[in-house]
Length: 60
Image 1: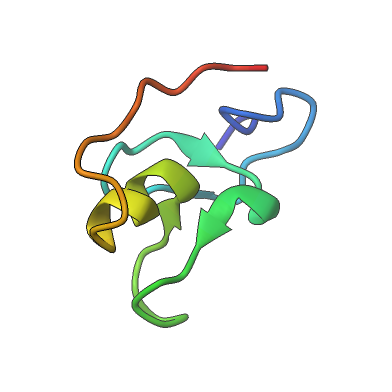
Image 2: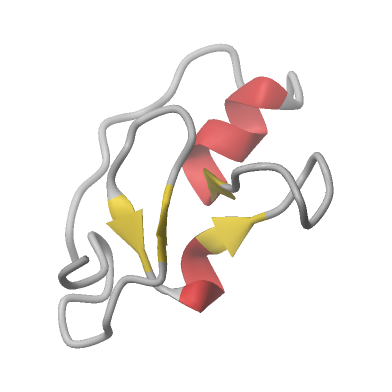
């Protein structure tokens, strides 16, 4: 699957259901339960209504 979009030295274990970027286990949120596809943190905040739009993802 490649490397985590945010943590470039960590292997990606899954992809966000919204933005489709690969992320490590620390970056994925299973907001709808463990059997549903995960979100990355920025997309989870938008899906929960905490943030209205997703800010651009920037590697740090």
